[in-house]
Every structure is written in structure tokens, then in C-alpha cells.
Amino acid sequence: DQQVKQNSPSLSVQEGRISILNCDYTNSMFDYFLWYKKYPAEGPTFLISISSIKDKNEDGRFTVFLNKSAKHLSLHIVPSQPGDSAVYFCAASVGDSSYKLIFGSGTRLLVRP
Amino acid sequence: SQTIHQWPATLVQPVGSPLSLECTVEGTSNPNLYWYRQAAGRGLQLLFYSVGIGQISSEVPQNLSASRPQDRQFILSSKKLLLSDSGFYLCAWSLAGGIGTQYFGPGTRLLVL
Image (cartoon, rainbow over all chains, first blue to last red; front, top):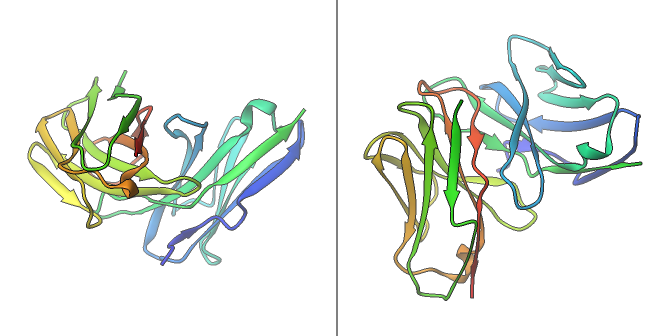
């Protein structure tokens, strides 16, 4: 049972435009969400996170939106740059002592020059 | 600042041979430590996590084991590798106390032939 789902395996966007990556979850107990960026043959790099008490968090070109009622979060990248081309993973955790992050399967973003 | 190291970067091993992958963290004390595996085209699967020396929790039954002989050292082992053990292995750390961002190492690509 996939608790965190990224239904789009790939996304292609023109440089300068907005990239929107989506993530859905099923466990209503999740209260902390993260986005990671991963280049081939490298470890994931933390991008941005959001707590369930917020519905938006912004860091430079990256904004994460959380819709708890829909169990949906999204990552917006504006403006998109060719260097943003990578695989993006969303992850979620429960704020207890489980220490676990549950990852989605990833979305490959290609930003075309 | 904190850094995380993994080695080796790449490993090719025959079926039935033993395995030892090492992960060390610098710049922090008593971190939570994690081992993940990413199979080709898949998301990240949590294998083990540790909240202290000698404390290991296993997430999935498998052919692998983990140990934490020192505070900032985490080792992934196998006595006899299977073909299905091939994948990209990632070590991660987070601050003690549970919920929080995890930071990943560069990964080890393991190919079992």
C-alpha cells in the first residue's frame, strides 16, 4: 500500500516557466512533509519542508503548498532553470517516535532551454 | 557543519559473497541514522534505522543486517548476497528526537552478478 504517491513519473517544462510537481498521501496522521531533489548516482538533496500546521512554505524559487483536506501537496518552481532537471521525491512522516520518512516514487523533471 | 560519508561508491560482487557498506557522519552527536535502498526506477525504501549505539530497527525482512558500533558509524552487511540485493544504497542522518529532515550521503551502487 503506497501511502505517498507521485502519479506523474515525468514532467517537461520550458525554461523560465513554472514547474508544478504533485504528491498525494493517504495517511491522515502525516504531519510533516518534505521535498528532495536527486541527480543520477547521487544522494537526494533536501529542498524544502512544510509542517501540517501551515499551508504554504516558500524558499526562493521553491514553494510548497499543502492541502490537508485533499491530502495533497505540490512543489512549485518559478522560474524553472535547466539545472532544476532532476528527479523530485516527496516524503512524509508522522510526528511521533517512528523516525520514518515515507517516500513517493519520484517525478523526473526536465527543464528545456 | 555536518557531513556524511559513504563508501565504496560502486561495488560489483558475485552472488553468495559477503557485503559491508560503511557510513559515517561528522559534525553532530547522537544522530538518528538510516539505510535506504533505491531499486532501478523506484522510490526510496527504508531498510534500517538507529537511534543510538547498538540500537537497530529493521523495516523489511531481507537478506541484510545493520550495525552501529559507534555513535556516528552505521554499517550495512550481508553474509551472502542475492541478485535481488542489487541497487543504490543510501545512508542518511537526522537530528535526534524523531521528526525532522533527513540528510543523505552520496550513495553506493551495488551490482550483484
